[in-house]
Image 1 (cartoon, rainbow, N blue to C red):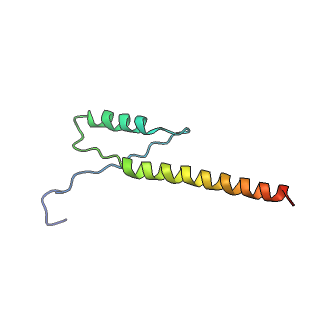
Image 2 (image 1 turned 180 degrees about the horizontal axis):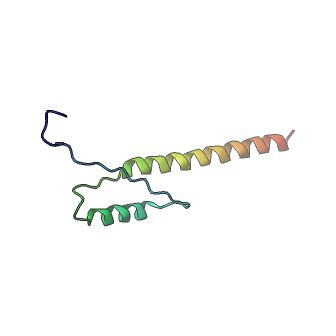
Image 3 (image 1 turned 90 degrees about the vertical axis):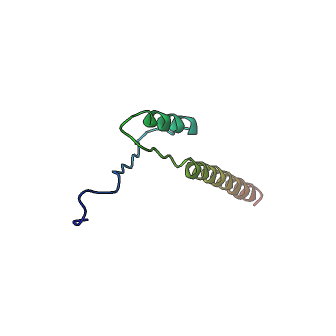
Length: 79
């Protein structure tokens, strides 16, 4: 880097909003569209695919835990 006149790489900012409640996918997309409207920004990327996979993993995990709890509860009932 010391041999270059200036930095050839653009500045990158990673924004992670802190929220106390869950934000649905539509609100996340709205945040991305709002950020793209800022003329100082050249590119905005929101990893929606990753968020959708995480959401599906959370839903599946909840279903598995409920099914396991119901099975164990049913088994204890018959003992």
